[in-house]
Image (cartoon, rainbow, N blue to C red; front, side, top):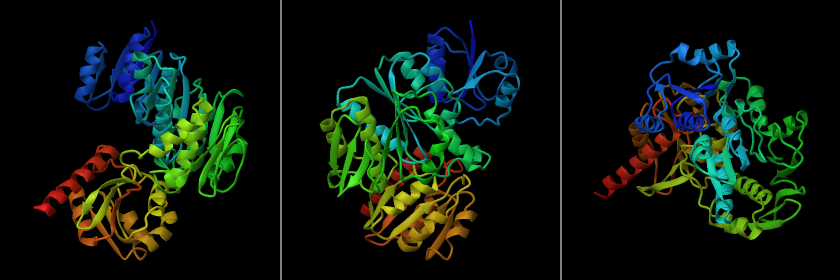
Length: 450
């Protein structure tokens, strides 16, 4: 019996452990920190042996193979020790792919992947497909493979998950864009991060599909360096290429060589150029999977977006509060500011990932009346935008940031939480940051109405 060790006791690790148990491995799970009670209960239900708050090397370094959760960096001592001994370290996606015959739509990119994944899943689901949602959203791919029997999976993939994939193949691969992100995990070298994203292409065949943004300069520059076996389906708002998708006279026009659709962007409930790209990519993916164009159009027109991405949180004192907590990099914030049509009080900050704020300077100068920095170290943000934005405030908590934002906002303004940074200095994750923001808005509404 092969020994499978799982590093990390969160959603990905738990799912991998369950799949390992069901497929006949000798499984052991280890987490350097505490494991959440909900996962400990579930591990016990599945009789998975585990440890928390530290790694016992003799129980890990005897593994035949190790599944590493995506949040654990390659430079972690236990991962280095495994690699020094030649023990294979893979991702949950690689493991799960071995045990399913389902077809996969895999979506990656620096920005837009969650919205595109959610919309693609909606298109297939509403068309009657037996489809699961997995990866960075939904349940873990491994747990779904262990406990469900889907014909299709729509999977959101991070660069960290791609790094641990070797034999896995995407039937339909979608690359939204590549902009600087997570550079702290890639030795602050952009090319390392780019190469990680292009792993979405590995093992594809001429029967597969590769959907990508032809307008993204980094993708365009690096694409000639890669052998693309799959059928290419580019999308663009600037030029038309068939098969593919483009913007023509306010309509998204798409073709996969078999079907053709046209979606009036004025009928979409999600606005902004970023959502035009998202709808293009999702439409091409759904077409490649065989969804009828009428169903694709209906799903696109009824889609209202995803939580924590330009999500209306309420109105206080005549100012609209918007939760864009998922904007954890500069490019995401660029799209958020691009879509703003009213004066903005911008809340940003957190754990910097090697950001270059230069692309935001023009929008900040034209649209932002006040910047509220929210983090334990705001020096880089303060330096970047002092003299650009009329008022820049440094705060070290959500309560302080919200008080500053409320005092700076006037009726008709927008208070936009769009951090451009990771959340781990003050919050558990971006979801926690967004939930706390929304809860604070509700509290402010109650106080205003009292």
